Image (tube, rainbow, N blue to C red):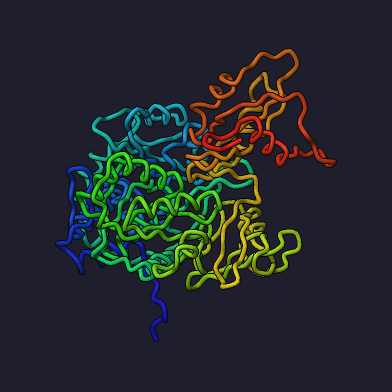
Length: 546
């Protein structure tokens, strides 16, 4: 008997869509337009090029690229040949890059030469000792064999993606089919790095079962081939990866891809391309509303989208979005990289409080509960506690971090999210914030310990603690409380400049507060709760009354 839910593979999805909708437009990027058949052909060409470069089944390949068609082609090509994709945040800088490429055991790094004002190749040269030929032999990266550059030039010590594509014809269709047929859907398909509580990002390992997660959400949101997804969220992030790249390939919906989020560009494209779906966090909703109010467009095609509206601070923006971006019907959801998108989801026919003031109802295949984080006991409706999740789509684990993986689950197999929420009487849930000290800056998870560790290497800094400060535009920004060394001379600009270029810009402290003595617990820990309150007192966010 066949399984009740057939196992499917990421690499098969483009073939399925090309069979169903060969001539339907699948992807738009600037002046480039591709049908589903053309997307399939580009993916196969990329897959053959990777095989020609020596990428084997199970190899890990880091992809450090901004949004562009090549990102999508490579994403599915890697899956098709059984390689494991490692998406890297394009706002990462040298310290982040070095850690992720090394910790992930990547055999290949694919990146830009230059994109916009950012010289990616220059940062690679700072981190990796590039060879005279094109095969890397850096002892700091024992698995890394090749750096591939997506750009117009040829650079010493690297391989150009154009030259790799020129070698694609050396691999036969039969060889590609044989390789694709050997891919095990229970094996990892990608490792996505997310900030944790131990100082550096952790690699979340997922397999192909996420297809079910996306398909079921497509059904609940009525996403079909008639839809057009505005794809401005970064593809390296779970949100964009899932709700644009994967969603298009399970539903037949078209993607309108942009390099970055520019609210005016997005709304112009909604009008000209008849966009129906738009997603985002608080900052995206605010930017879209501001742009529409400044210059009204015809948004009559907009239908729905996921906006993280559970937190109390996000609710006003969600209601504003429905007023300003009519006829958009916003849905709220709860998820994270470890449990994937939409563990909870509101419904299209929910009333506004359920769509805009909750984080939705548990999706099929998920169990969600709220517990006392100290005792693990279930809490009644309306009492805040820690959100815990159990279900088929949870991660395989954190890559090469067995202790952290084990510690993230309780004895009964529930994933401990570290997030605060409450269950409502009707079974809906609401995300309220984080028990952990994690910051959420413009939708990005930021572990304060990373910036703290970096700042402690500054010769003038004795002690440091980084906390979050509410921010109208970004949700939260980082504030560094700094204790200077005796007789040291360091100012706010010096502290911020010390971090710049070493970590992603969203991890940078936006404010620095100098302090003579930290409030401490009896056990010798800094009382960050008091620091957060002090930051609010000293650095009142714009738009808040006194």
